[in-house]
Length: 76
Length: 261
Image 1 (tube, rainbow over the protein chains, first blue to last red):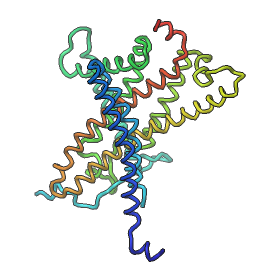
Image 2: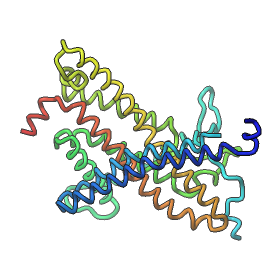
Image 3: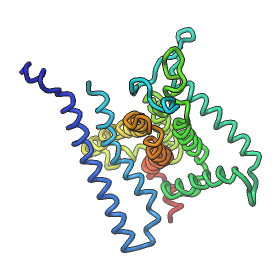
Image 4: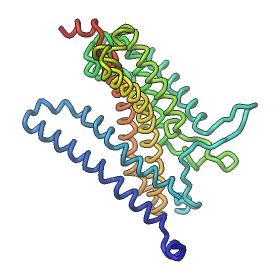
């Protein structure tokens, strides 16, 4: 196992996995929020006034992706 | 000539604020200095702008202040569902909004970060890119929300927010414990959201400027524009979430229910 650790830089793999998997969740969430908003606006154009709420929900979902980016710098 | 614009040294990434010097037992960190600078800037700007404000048509940059306060009151009115409460607590929420926005936007100015150093340590660091600062703001916000909720809904109505059902039902206490736990998670997420968005934005700009070499300023430009948007958005989200927590905690008030009817 020591040989493996010397040959392969596991930190880089860990960071890559962290960023990749950490980005999946918020990306799907933001896509679904945007899709729901467009759906609502196309059915009822008056609901375009909820753009502010849209950004709040994006902000709520975004934290988890940004947590992964912060973890990227914490993993040594 | 171009070397002046390129990142000459190793890329520096710091998530925590750095110690600058000590006065007695009191340590001064670089984020504290910039926090004071932005506070003083806000106070001066607002005092100057206040003299221009009047009823009727306003000319010049004071319009921005007028529009900003009106925006806060409108947003709070939508969230709280009551014009009276929105106007009453607008000073608190407008202060937090303007302070966070000013700190975020001033963090993007040139000179912040590694440009100005004191003993090899960055002299300036945006106040919101420091977890201690945002945590302090979040604790203040959550505590003030509880106080306002008690004031608006009364102690009984406030208790109903935590223990909504009949008191002989054991499930009520389970829900109450969960609600109290939720209050703490709100505090942590409120602080972490603001801190991580700003700190990661700074890191993003520096990483992409570093990667681009001589074209650093060009590569950093789109991310700086994105950060201007994110900085304003985070100030808005912080204030709206505080208002939403307030409206949840004070929702059992009889006064507000009467206004709706």
